[in-house]
Image (cartoon, rainbow, N blue to C red; front, side, top):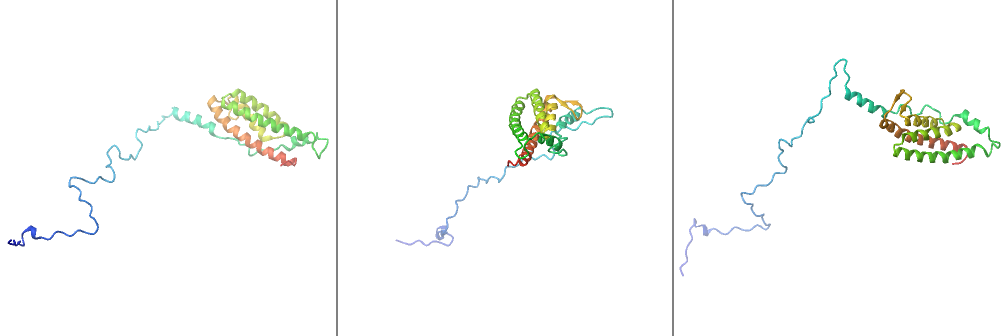
Length: 217
């Protein structure tokens, strides 16, 4: 059978391409385009340097009052804790010494010590009732409980607790005695929330002091 010679230009004369040892990834169709790493930012998605639709402050003319500013100021006033009793002595020594004079036995403190321990139980019970009244937004009840604990605290010379209880009493009546102004129920509750936290801290400090005095750690 005759052998056909292939010319140099004959494509069949080219030797088949060698395969690489590592497989090559299949070629992607020309019409397929890789998706961009991130979606293009639309005009509506571009970050805004300044807030949109932000109300501009209203400039007050001479003689006019900016209502929005005055209302914000009134709401912010109850947030200020004007007096935390830090400058008041924890214990009024004169009152406490008068209580100690009623002890017939200075070693056992037969009169004053039982009275102090009764006060501890009374205070814890009253704080629980105050929390319930606050949850119910019962301002009159809070005022009454503040008045009650104020009296027993004053009898032992617990100055800070007494002062804060007096504030609870007045605030429960929607009255700010320091400014001489009446408070709304909402404003009074904001003040009472701080006073209730403060009076418990002051009570704990007084309890530690009294127990140390009587040798009961």
